[in-house]
Image 1 (cartoon, helix red, strand yellow):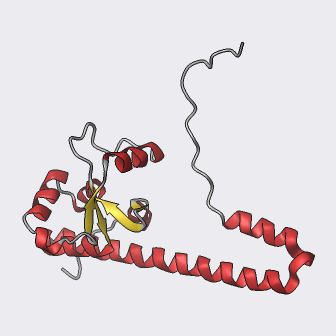
Image 2 (image 1 turned 45 degrees about the vertical axis):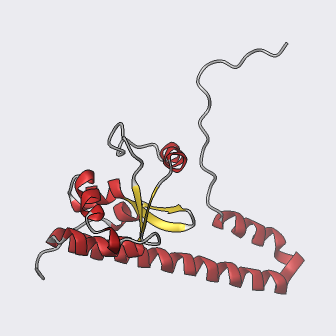
Amino acid sequence: MAGKRVIIPSERIEGHIFLIRGEKVMLSTHLAQLYDVEPRALVQAVKRNLERFPEDFMFQLSAKEFADLKSQIVTSSWGGARRAAPYAFTEQGVAMLSSVLRSERAVMVNIEIMRAFVRLRRMLATNAELARKLALLERRYDAQFKVVFDAIRELMTPPEPKRKRPIGFLPEKV
């Protein structure tokens, strides 16, 4: 097992980590893709072991949360029409999945996912530290460099998601 490695690009994993209900989570549909199992098989394995997945490990998205998420992410990876919204797994829930799925691939994928969560935590901590240092410098050099500090803060702010324009013509104003 030491010589075998499932290589999943970290960008692929990190691209599937979302912030929902104030938690960093991964969706059951994306996890199933990474583990190379059918989404329903993953959900069945979880339902057979529900005692291992309390609310702070896993929750099901509401219809509104799912619709909002789909509108933000323009991708065809949602598997077509779905009867139910996917489940969201926190970092602890993802860790628990390897004990439920019990495959070598599940263990290797989980290791990479845990590393991705750690990298994300480090990036957020680094950004928070940078913001703290910037505030300290701003207090020290206040008006002198206000334009510079404003520009740096603007660069640190993530861009707003683009809103879709309505299809069709707008009615003429009378």
